[in-house]
Image (cartoon, rainbow, N blue to C red):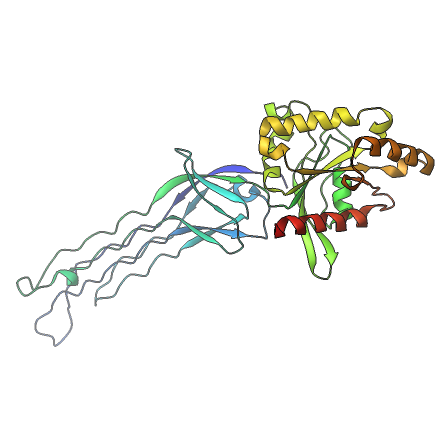
Amino acid sequence: MKFVDEVDIEIKAGKGGNGIASFRKEKYIEFGGPDGGDGGDGGSIYLKGTKNLNTLADFRTKKKFDAKNGENGKNKNKTGAKGDDLDILVPLGTIVLNADNGVLISELMHHGERLLVAKGGKHGFGNLRFKSSTNRAPRKATKGTEGEELCLKLELKLLAEAGFLGKPNAGKSSLMRAMTKAKPKVANYPFTTLNPSLGVVDIGYGESYVIADIPGLIEGAADGIGLGMQFLKHLSRTNILLHIIDIQNVENNKVNTDLSEINLELKKFDEDLSKKKQYIIFNKIDLLSSEDLNIIKNEVYKSYEKKDVFFTSTVNNKGIEELKKYIYNELEKLNTN
């Protein structure tokens, strides 16, 4: 399914039901009086956050939403039924804006959280409401009001505690699969990950954290080149950035170049994002002999702190468990500060 992280929708709450003017016409009752009932209120529209969605893709085909109208009043002083409210499910992290003026309305961050976005119309009054000592047979009844109607812009920022970043084909998606049960689509072409994906890293004993795999970034991503710019914003809510490097680039002296280019894109997009804690993960170590790997480690440790560097392979799972537990502990430290 295609990832969708921004969409416009049109919503219209239900109209209130009309009140009616009617009079009692019952056998053996000499003087019939007004008995027109009120209408029912129109249904309101709510956005409801759910942890069971991580995309706005459902809105690709359905962009208009209408709540039920209230029923008209009935004789014998019967009130019309209220229109059913409509809950529209959205993934956690959805930002809601007025599409016409760009004003932020709110954002949904918690499972089950409901946000009223369009209030249903009020019911009209039946003629019984207007009976008085001076007007015993009122013929007046009022109409229900229209429900609120507006256009909304929904924007999604993935909710993850840690996020992968790196150049295309660095092995991010394979590492995601190794650390979690997520199954991101991968292939051997420049933009390996077409869609951001979330996965839960299970540490055991009920402990876990959420990680996001973001499409590979290329130079100029913050300026709109490639797919990266579309998804850079999803990294803004993460606490830790995991920078994945293809270890073969160490031998080609491309590591510093890759790191510099990507950090520049982060800074151009959001300076606060560029200041987040990063850990460097040299992936695909199965492609090297033990001797060559040790030589590279010694070189890497000359430029980077040992505690901030990891070496992994998704082929034989080397370094994966160590990485999972270390990141969990670092997130715990951040959460307690």
